[in-house]
Each structure stands twice: as structure tokens, then as C-alpha cells.
Image (cartoon, rainbow, N blue to C red; front, side, top):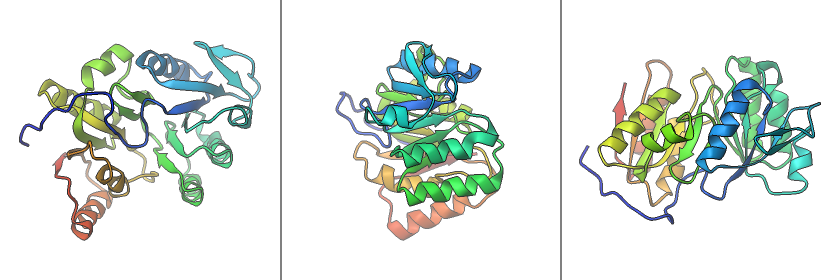
Length: 253
């Protein structure tokens, strides 16, 4: 890939999240969620609340905990939710978020029954929302915000990710960071990087995310790390051909 011109400034666009994105964490009092909360806050993300039924009134690194999503959305605007609840409760948590006006779900939990994932995907479409995951480490708009555990601790995230013109997508959260780190070391920043999820059924495929990147003037190219199996690469090829995509794509596996 030829070296792309590095863009600078803080008025650059991104997809799905930016510096103004507010979100909650469902299951915030779990051990992994507590660490994720700290990492996201340290990076500058705007977490406005957390939900764990029965634990309302507590705080996690200063983030207030509520018993329900409605308690938060009834008093302030919430754009997204990170779901870290156990597999048996993900469907109900996702439905609760969607029914209360949240338009972006990032499901970290893995091993959710496939039938229930299919229901979540259908429900998300009905509410005209976006779903990333399940089994996703999240997404990041470098220097602006990150949702989920992508990149790890804030200092490590800042080393791996930089702002620029290349979108990144991968089923593997670790490879999303590895690719972005390699680009950063080469002087090429990223517009948005997304761990789309490693489970058999996920909410947003490469092809389904392409229109968002297409409409983002900051994104000049995309790098995708693929894994064998499944139809997503063929769907992406069909999208590129059918829509005469303006964005060059680099595939690695």
C-alpha cells in the first residue's frame, strides 16, 4: 500500500463514535467491566452511567450505577451501550437498551445462543440501530473515544492507535490493534478501527459497515484482517463490485 497522506487536526470525522459520543456499560460491576470502565475513562471516553440490576446507587470509578437503562436515558441522551453481561442475560439487556432509544450496541460477551443472537440482530434492525459483536473488543476513533476493551490500557491504546485516513476491521480484537499499531509505526493513522466480533453470527459484517466508511470523507483506505470460513469476504467482494466502491481495501489473513 502506498504511504497515505497523514491528516492532522481534531475536526476529522469518523464512523459510529466520536468525541461527543456518550455511552453506558451494562454489567458495569463485573470484574472485566470495571477494568474496561477505567481504561475507557482514562482514554477520554464519555461513560455516563452503568447498569447492574440490584446494585443501583454504587459507583465505578465515579460512574454512577443504576438498576435499569431507563433510569439513565430518561434524564440524559445516551448514544451507545457496551454489554458485558453473562450470556444468558444478553438478549434482555440488548432489548432493554434498544427499547430505551440507544442506537449503538457493542456486545463483548461471547458464547451467546445463536438463536438469541439472531433475535438481537433482527431487533436491532427494527430499531434502525447498529450492533457490533457479539464477542467483540469494541471500536475506537483514535484520540476521540473508544467503546470496549480495544487497545487495552489507555497508554497502550495511545501508542497503538493514531488519527488518520485508514479504516481497520477484523473479527479478532487483538489483530485490530496489531494492524493499527503497524500502521501507526509506519506513520499512517486510522479513522475508525472496529473489532466486528468473532462469533458465528454477528451484528455488522464487513459489507454492512462499508457504507459508513464510504460516507466518511476522512477514510481513504481500509485494511481488513480476515479469517477462513464464512461468507463475509464474498459479501464484501459483491458490495465492492455492485457499488463501485471508492475505497481501496487491503486484505490480510
